[in-house]
Length: 348
Image (cartoon, rainbow, N blue to C red):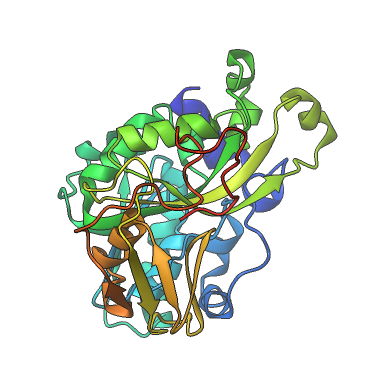
């Protein structure tokens, strides 16, 4: 699918979220109260031209430098700008001029709404497959976000490689997108409506994991996911028999991450100090860490907490001096499992 078709769909065909023909590019209704409060301050024109499929507001953002890939009219840029504060910065990139015109028109409005002396956001016109052409400094961002946009990219691998290049070591890519349960057939991928609705450009989920690792993001972690029901009988027939999900992943730029979950006898204790998470810290969908409780972790999880912005919120027990093999419950391919023995559903 060419860039021009997507630009036309989002710049001219869609005049607001009500024009969408499926529920793929729709954010779920449930969101934390602190985020609802921020969104209530976003300018109406920005909100009504918003197309996203998840929440891309990770915690502990004060002072962070954030890049939003496919920012559209800037809803997430402005919401994140409230969370990073005046000492932080949020940069939005989008290929659709009409969307960027709306975003840029409201910079002063949001600076006043958040009581800042000046705007802490900027917007760039460009393609997320060609991030190296935007003049952004390599290794300059703490976090890169994207909301239901990478599926629209013509070269997903290039997006991931470019994001890795722009992230600081210890930074993360935290983003929501649509994934398919199998590879999308060529004929379906060329359907402009299905592509614009964030469906036929979706990656097969296992291909996404492979591309992420190849781009330098070892051990991708899924944060949330939900099925997409389409809710349009005509388009449901055109995508059958494929199924789709919306999922949020976090990819850490940590060069020492290992291919598997290795056990070094380590554990962490969460201090309860991450803003808006006094009782539990959710790293991903199988790491919900209670405050004050000793929580055993694999080496990769240790690094995701110790070598990132989260380090100050944890106490760390152990080191990498002794290796105990695969972390219990994560060794489904181990030849040392008794024949017929299944690994537990849990994983480090």
